[in-house]
Length: 268
Image (cartoon, rainbow, N blue to C red):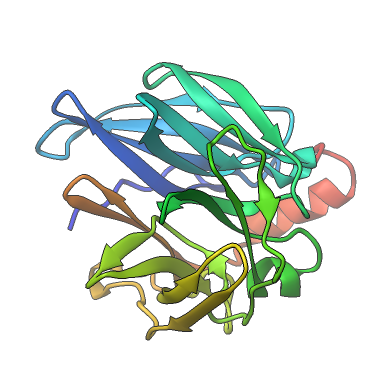
């Protein structure tokens, strides 16, 4: 297992999604700074031996960005980052891989989408996401929408929220099919936000119905060392699997940042 080195104090990388290209691996992730409470999307570039070659910011907006789900469709590369503070959800099209992205279509669903996860199933495009609102909704409800094409129109599922369970509702990675069953990684937030990942085995998924069962929690590996307070994302990148893990840090420096923000020293 290969771990990315820790970044500067009071920052983190999260939500890794990747694409292999030209014998390189490109991992897109949320780059967050506690001092500004603002996330942007960085790309980390690795060679075939998983040596990190570069890291740079490729997408930034006035609002917070995270969960940069990247995928290929219709001969192009797309990104579906979370941007619920913008009030909607936007698909971005890659203009020049991996650095240049343009907003392609803005979707106003039944709620601003949190951790939006697009995938194909039985001839339709689907979008799994959690709703905006209180933490109980953000962490414990699953919504769906469907469309015939990425451009839409998109229709929210009439059963929304199709699942209410803090242990297995918020999306947390790339869907996959195992033994003919569609599985969606979801976060187990029953004890803490992003505490573990479960696979939601989707038994029925149609524009009218939804049935699913959650598997056992997958927790941070022992090799994560002190970063074992949570396993937040699990995604596929070619033959590799990407994860992020977390630890809780209640340092005096962190408390000082929170106090300074409250006193207006930094803009949120």
